[in-house]
Image 1 (cartoon, rainbow, N blue to C red):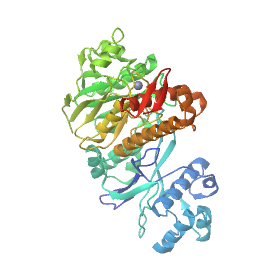
Image 2 (image 1 turned 60 degrees about the horizontal axis):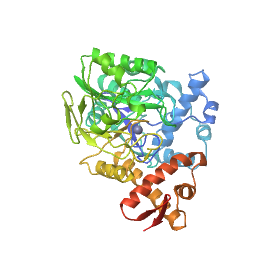
Image 3 (image 1 turned 90 degrees about the horizontal axis):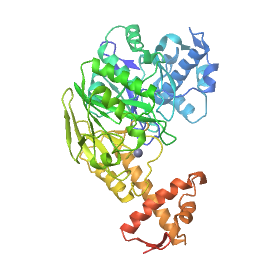
Image 4 (image 1 turned 90 degrees about the vertical axis):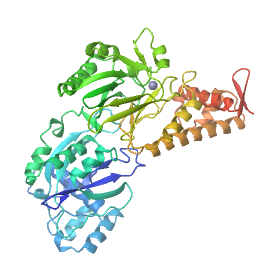
Length: 485
Ligand SMILES: [Zn+2]
């Protein structure tokens, strides 16, 4: 939604950081279709699916912002509109009833199609999303009721872009594309709509070039990883000179897709400095040999990762804790390598000191859970590593190895810590109640988990127990039995 024809501002919203899906992201008002949407007529529009999508857009816009795009809405006062919005929110009245009672008519012309995007496969939830452009009607205002959306504001697209460049906001690819396009175009409405739909991704093409932060490219490749994840994210960071983190896929067609993506980036005048590895797990390193020989680029990792990969991947350079990787360009990248053991001994995260974003590898993930499997996994170190991230001077977004980027870094890390603390509490309770071995502890401490996952849960429990023993809170007896100290 836009307003002010001479220098248009766009209305964007911030999704609540606590939401499981795209929490903390900036987006546009919108939502999912309702069965009822198909029953509402739209003047000037025949096709049922397109008509239903326009109804959905108009309904969601009204529910989320109070703006009503309908002929006849100009007869309603601000108070009347607010009252009707409350009726709908409370389930008192449907959108269709509202339109009929006030003799309002939805019109195709008030919503100009602006593309259709399909969520990339790495996402835990996939949508086929239609976008529309609309002007804010005269005498109406957009007001956000905090809930699923935390806030909303009118902003000049170029200012929105600046905020993204500073790492202050995070957006999904279609939103970033829209903001960039709006910042660059000043023509009439249909010119803007044409520019918005000019890229193949806006016509349901596959979205593979994802730039979550400026110069932080996110390229998910299919890997044999742990469900529910199906992909590992390969990251490319920098300007004229880039580094590549975790070229992960063992599959030829996925390696070829990554090659093609990199060829495009290199064709734009970039060179690759080095390939970095977050850790040694196969779903992070299986494409390394192919890529390093293809590009003639060396591989860098923590010494402990290199040791685990000896004979399989040639790591040429060891990355030490706090090593700085400076990459020139606009806005410029200064990645600090953070040795963050816990998931594996040699695990690294990369903290961008400019935008306060962190490439987290498998320390924090966007889908599924992080496995802490002793002896490689260590719960005490894992929690210390999470604490270390919390102690960084600034935090913005997290770029995990699996699943989408996470908009509210601090909240997510705190959630991870409290989840592990909760589990530790339940393990202690189980021991206090008389359970002695991991096999006895798991059904109590993981009672909500399907028993098919008890094997994994036992490994996690062992990691918790090792931590508790090290802290002197639990004693290990013969035969893998544990007692409270
Ligand atoms: Zn891993």
